[in-house]
Length: 140
Image (cartoon, rainbow, N blue to C red; front, side):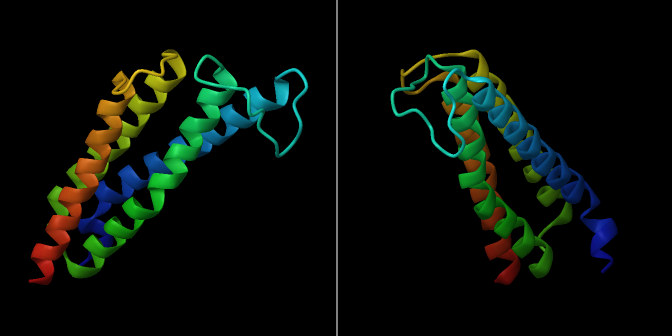
């Protein structure tokens, strides 16, 4: 098995996920640094969804919180030889859902749950769970 070729679609999706995270980090850092009274390393506890600084920081942190599970699942999928086509599709579903989640979080200030961004968070989570199911199937 030539896993670099077999999983190239999944690896391209991973590159997009990582690039998205770097963009989120840059945006969050830039917004926070330009905020009035900004203190490096400290988030104002009074900020909420009405603040673009809060939303950009939470978007980045949410992606950061979810990345280890997805990276681990993709790594496992490659190592156990899970279906490469489905692995690629599910990685891209996750990548695109995280981008849409990001855009909606930046654009919509709401405390309502579920918010529009919640649906794309859930889609990414489901993609990760389905991929984990493919890993378990490959192991069996």
